[in-house]
Image (cartoon, rainbow, N blue to C red; front, side):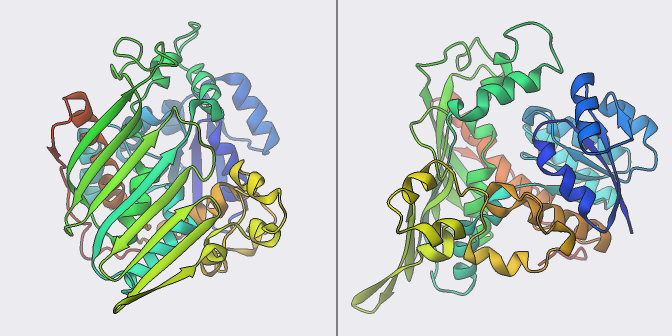
Length: 415
């Protein structure tokens, strides 16, 4: 089976267009974008001859497209994914799957009915720290899970102002209106944190409590009256009880003096061993009777470029500023060895994850198997954030997290 992919939205999709075009199982890439200037410029840059002035036009006229890849503003994912599934298309979506519980429920219902492939493009599922914890937990090294901490620290100054302002131009010509969507509640974008932690042990959150930090810098973005969510919080923390008895702390912060690593498993503790990470240093401590053994595992998790230069006095500063952010790490090598040769030399963003995302989506469609981050997992990464933000807005009351179960037993998941 050959994929014919309609990409919706210009921006982040530019990192993926060359990968989709290069994959030997993709025979065509089309593009939809509301801003004509962007559409023409991007189509010319990547030699895309099939273009559409809107997503709806693509669905109406692009009859031979069998896949849709959604790269629009995060709060619009749910409705677009639903439309694409109803049109009979397989779907790749940037994170999150959707921003509302009822949208997620409808997406899962449609997938069960149609057996179409859906994949959420969660980069952090493939992050070195997540892979390391997942591999060692599966091997039994940690024992039973006890407690963990993960976070996504992305200050608004690190590109978010431009992302929201440029992204909103397609929907409003009124100056300043972009701020109404820039104030998205951080816990409605939680999967860079939850995806790492929950995937490491294949668990789900069952009860959450959320807490918010009221922003003092941009009240015209983060306040009850300035955005469409009535959200005053630029930083949110969630404490989650898991179905395996463990507890995790998730931080989603948009106003914080921190750079890299932004998405990060800071701590992962079991009954037999523990993992801790900080910028440039990662350690495991194994309890062996009355004694403990500390192992420095930094070279397995740090970007290979940094590992080669770590003795340079300036290397740690470069790591902190993201200079190695697109490099692979040692723990990712077994995954990238299976990538098609056509990907060689192409840009591979977000800690070497973009190629893995494209590869797994194409493989899922061609083999009719569920991708690693299928809709049921995507739901379990997103729903705790929705519940935790509600908790924060309601005075930090504990809230039960809904769940939509497991995928059909006869539908194999890619390894």
